[in-house]
Length: 187
Figure 1: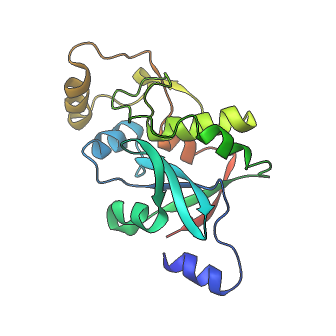
Figure 2: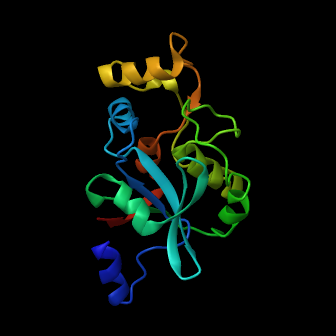
Figure 3: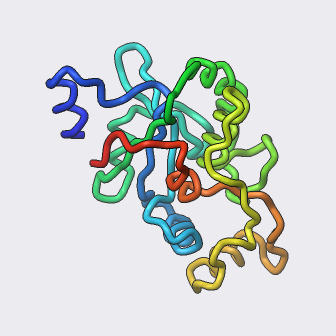
């Protein structure tokens, strides 16, 4: 948060609409996501400025706008990273697509349908639908490291013996590592 304040004081905008923000969630599934993806980041959303305030459009419960300061506070240690699409243009298109997901329930099963949405799926589909851009590569669930005991436990809780190993998935880590994004803030 200090970085955002300092950049604002210096007259340099720290955030732009459409920036993608990542953090390490404190949710019950965060450790499993981190182990399976080999990443510190387990949650993400898209930044938007509305009515003089910054929000994060996210899938956490229903898809919704969460005030930025609340979103940051939910992460581990208040750490977050903001990245921006290189040569970002026509970002306003994101918000026309965003309405089709607003209020959708969170997808604990990481399915690829639009009936329920998880965080990285929301961001990926916004950019794909609005701008035709795929940030990160879709993978099959089986391509992640599913061997860790924490991951195994979460898989059993969610799927029992029938894990959908061929389900397409996009992870926060795959999007974080995309060459299409440039770092903006690392706080």
